[in-house]
Image (tube, one colour):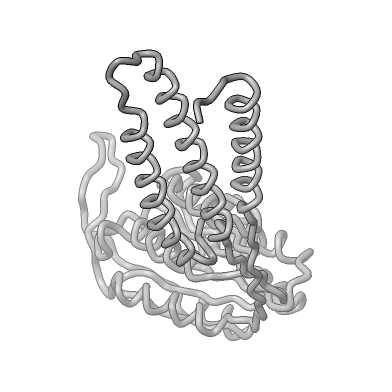
Length: 319
């Protein structure tokens, strides 16, 4: 809410001062000690001046032009369809990333999503199997909610890279976007699934989908929580990433392979991908204005008519 002509409010000062003088003059004029009947007439006269004061105030507010002002930006152009394939196998519990690989990946993906504009983003999770966690959406709040709910052991343990790519392609093949992208994040070696990663990459290339692959994990060993008959136990595990395969997948489809060894490096990788995958989006700024001055004029008119009706026709005033 704003006033288009706020300086008109200064008129309230002389108006209020004038009405105050009229009120004081009225008080002095009606001070007749022996006639108690004048008290009622004095009250009526003061009420009349209050009505007039309110009428003047409404008129001054009206000429100050109160209005509700809002700017709206409309975007033109087509964004990118991005499918994120996230490994949720047990090895993502490794603590070489803080607090672990999966949670670190979720944090970075969340930041990535918040930086996008006008793109549709979907999410696939995979271990020994793969499911589409959320289809393409521009509702980033909903996407972040689904991302937050992802945890370990939602799927049988293992790493089905080919199946994850094929599952992502099932969403992208019908896409009409000018640019279609898969960001695949894993810390393992393909050891499950019915589809080979090479065959899935070939299909991606045929339908024009670019795949960025990210290998997650430090060199050597890292501590991880592992399920045992006695419960969860913290043990050292070896990081095994098939970098040759991941690089081949990205090269085949026109993407790029990255290796993330800590939280900061993973964040830098997603920032680089975000810069690489940009489309030119034109925007136009519209202003929406709703005027409210007419309501104050209507109130002033109603009060003026009420004053005439009440004080000139119903009640008698002493001149």
